[in-house]
Length: 291
Image (tube, rainbow, N blue to C red):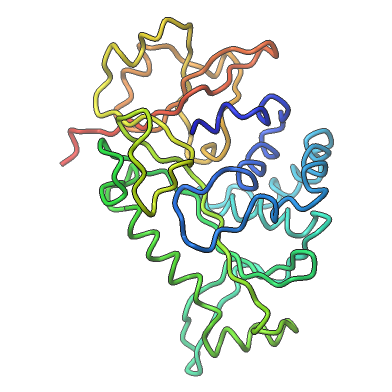
């Protein structure tokens, strides 16, 4: 699936709102078994609220500006956007963010991303945004631009995180928030892009066959640039990876500049009537010279 072509991206223009929308509406990169649905995230009126935020983004912009630069960590930025939503959306209430769990000896056991109410029902949420690829598209081989960061390792860590509040210290945290542990639901929000050499890899668990998919390349070859359409390109700064690219002409580069990129994530761009260049495809390029 090419999520960048969703009609939503024709409507949303504010960069922070676009990033928030990607967290709320993108398909999961892999199946955790505890996915929180887009319907639950948006609620009955959340989509209208998202559009209102786009038209009047000052509150969200101020919230982000107060927290920048997020130590250069995309995950911190994504968590802040979701926290804003949970605090302000009509159907949600944020009870806790980055809740630290400690055992009886005072040792840290872990940290729960979010404890929130959805229409009055309590949830423990874990958010992760990742970008993994390999030639084959097999989850067992998928890694990030940092080859030590693998999909299966992250999936295992997420599974552990989802069980944090089942501990004695977790139950004490919930009691302090006046939440009945027996009524607590656990859910994940897994976002990101999976890359492979094939147009769409053969679905293999836990990878989501309908997730956001891009092209994985080890070498820049002529066939990458030979679809007959006029394109420009954009090399993503790490903090801009969440949503499909929408950039000004002066922020784009040509084929020659892209061929000089040894490692990174790149958007293939097509110009739309609004004058901006919009992402039509995403590519992960890895440096094969790194040993």
